[in-house]
Length: 208
Image 1 (tube, rainbow, N blue to C red):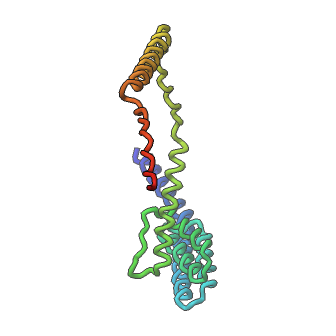
Image 2: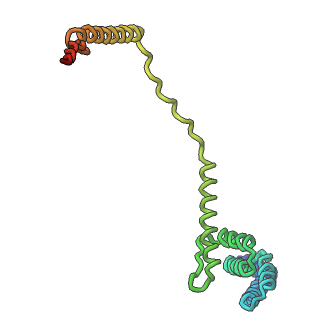
Image 3: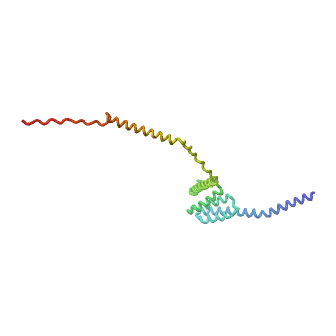
């Protein structure tokens, strides 16, 4: 029984040693890569502040080509590239770098006391653009509801048209009667008075 326990213990120890031998070089390589990128990013930032924007962009790109880069280092590299592109007035490339930065960290907020206003404004504009795009995509995914049919008016009764015709005829007949009555009364006293004929003036006196 003790022999079996010892064998199991030895097997576990050997397995752990093998795993250590396998993963130790990988972990060491990963640590070296991250340390190297940290140094390159620090050098790239110094070159950016020295006005050597192309060299800063190139070093940041080299770091981003490493798939083992942490999120914090990627954010640092994208921010550095954005600042360098803005300094060179390459606004399209700067927007692209800012977009990748926000895709990596959507809640990122620039520091208005440390970051230049063009970078701060670009981050704000890109956030609004990405939010509008997200809303459009969500609306496109929603099913389209067909419109409700409009309510139709009830059909008119069959005797309705005849009733309207009778009422209209009665109104017309009444108007004609009023007009005729008004025209007849005008000849008695309400019309235009007949002009009176005045007598001729007397002849002038004859001379004596």
